Image (cartoon, rainbow, N blue to C red):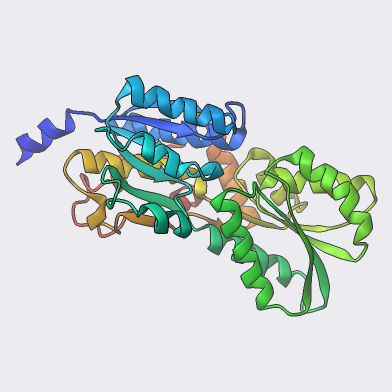
Length: 342
């Protein structure tokens, strides 16, 4: 048994990640950083191809893999709803696919099937609890009104992105529980600070009664904040991310509501795929399609701890400890940020 396990562990799987973001975009480069940390712990050969938020580039990267790279596993996202196209590209390939961060929508799966169905080499998916995060952000932002009537302006991400849609749906759930809060408008800031800034320049004068701003990420919140500052408006913000900038803004009180934790999602996916490569199928530990409860609300003290830990060259997490190879009796994977907050 021990010899067999040692032999299996000597065969490190190769993984290519089709990163949809810009190669200089902090969110996606940090995402890669934690994946590389996990790959180092697990002995995985990891290659990352950046899509530069360009659908043509994303598909070109996918074709590069199917025509020549042939890794053991390919990790893809459903950014710009490209998931079905990527699955079709690999339908005759021996490469095993895994959806990360955003998977195919229910409508897409109704047409082409889910994981391990029509596309048998599509093993499954791991996505964050985006809807819950959007709800909790909305709930805590609304609580700042202390039960008094207030107006709220929302900045969502790219329209064709499941994460953006789910976070906005979570906000709507929070609004449904708070009839005293009026959502004046929701716009697609496309995750970009400059776009949100330009939108806010026109929206804030249109809605002089707005006091609450919900933002699906941190960059858009900073764009609104800049526009509000130029117009002499004092607003209260909810945002989501783990950048040094947003953590410091939360510590300083400039952003009062913050959600974070999803930056470990890619690392968790590598743990699951490494287990699968060694004969321990993650379907037995949470199912083939999993939602990781990584996103959570953090207070100022926790933001300070995250700022200190994430600022280190090594985040000091041994991802082997959440593997089924180390813990064969575990029922689910737990790659939460709890240990970073101790």
